[in-house]
Image (tube, rainbow, N blue to C red; front, side, top):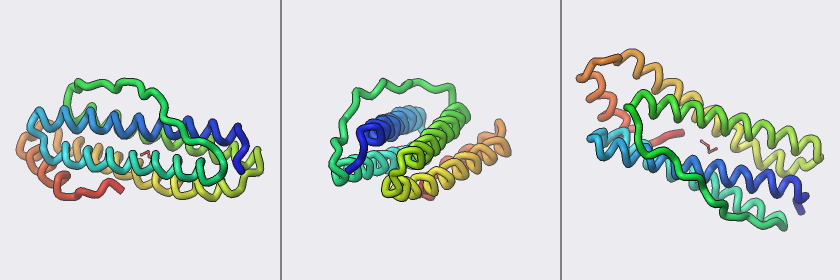
Amino acid sequence: MISSKIESALNRQIDLEGYASMYYIAMASWCQVKGYNGVAAFLYHHSDEERMHMLKLFHYINDRGGHGLVPAFAAPQNDFQGIQEIFDIVLSHEIKVSNEINALVELCIQEKDYTTHNFLQWYVAEQIEEETLARNILDKLKLIGDDKGGMYLFDRDLGMTGKTG
Ligand code: OFO
């Protein structure tokens, strides 16, 4: 059985993961409309992954005697200045999620909830991968700069990776 403190902290995490899933759809949709079909495919896929992160939390909370709740998600922005802005947002959002996961891990130690602590290790590892991926993409964008041909190849390659980590 989880404490109500841990239950509400995990429910806040549901909100973050679900919001991320919606945000990635908003970014994917913008890319699709602008003709960046590879980036769009990558972001749609990433949205699915965030939804899976959210569902894992529902199952865990409910299995431990709590109640996973669907929050009212805030509307993400739907308009973007370009691919650079999108991946800046991706990285800063992933850093935010990592910080929240770390705070949750800390709370588990305080509350002596070692089962939830163990459950959260999956998220800790996942966040390292996602932050690294976002940083690698930003490095590539820096190399490409204003090179249109480079951007064409970037879009094509990202569409082929499919995997967001
Ligand atoms: Fe990328 O946020 Fe989930 O864990």
